[in-house]
Length: 420
Image (cartoon, rainbow, N blue to C red; front, side, top):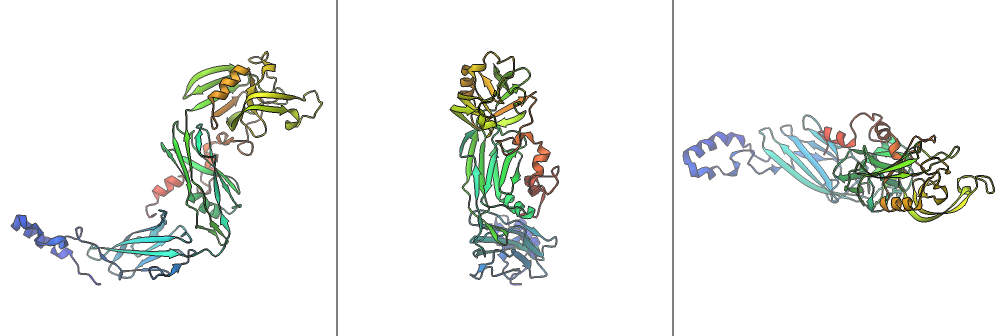
């Protein structure tokens, strides 16, 4: 080895400190291994691949660091690219080998810091840099986050649209691990694969009020499969407002609107009549339209039938893509609070509909109880995400690995001491 053991001078230095008092510097910084500058561990470790020789590394291959000296061992390794992404890895119990457990990114510049110690406990260090080359394929998986940046209600899920389908569970895990959602205040949340090209993210409970939600992707340049690499994604920033929840009781024909747990208004309403029952469950406000022309043909009612209608509707708050709204229904004021006479929407007076329209925002929650209708679909007709129990929601994550009651990705990362 190219360095000398240093611990043997500790006692001698201690005696000098006692004898000389102010002459504590007589031993210098080499008097104790913990105060010594780390030695250059270049002759003590080895890297796989052309690391540090100016050549570009194949991003398909894992990064590996081994201890070459039988009298020394690796104590820590960190590998990070220029964008701040860390490479996860595992260090063997005897410190003889560290290897990456997450893929390297293509076309990236990495800095690897390796810490070692010799048989006497003296610290060593080696820092190397290397660049990865281009992927072998031009197929790229891009990600588009939604909704658009802005302020939303506490029920708004985050969405991720993929540019091509990902079916394999292991490949889904690579994608999902790279999609980051951070909120302030922090919450427990998870991604759920809606289908091969779409994921939704929601917390266990609703988002906190006045929260900030940051969404980003670390997928660019990451290998997903032999023919697919991660592409770009524009980051997203959302904020939340008050916790506004409108609860409609179809049996009592009333809606109570709560803000931050306090009832602020109770409104007489009418909901869907027999054969057109309003969906039960939690829905998320999708948008607001001052004027909508509603036709029975849009929900499958034949033109000219006894149920046919064609009406101008104002102050319409949409809760499903199939056409369920909370809206002004001046033609049914006599039934509001007493009977259900609509074709599935929640109707109220024009004044009440205007108040509701002005009070809620996209992402707020509308919950219907005691209707004879089916429960709101979790996906495909708006955001019914909150109608899935948390256990089932987490079961839709590729990182939960079939154990929705086990630790989630965030908890698992904290429990894995060898991850970098």
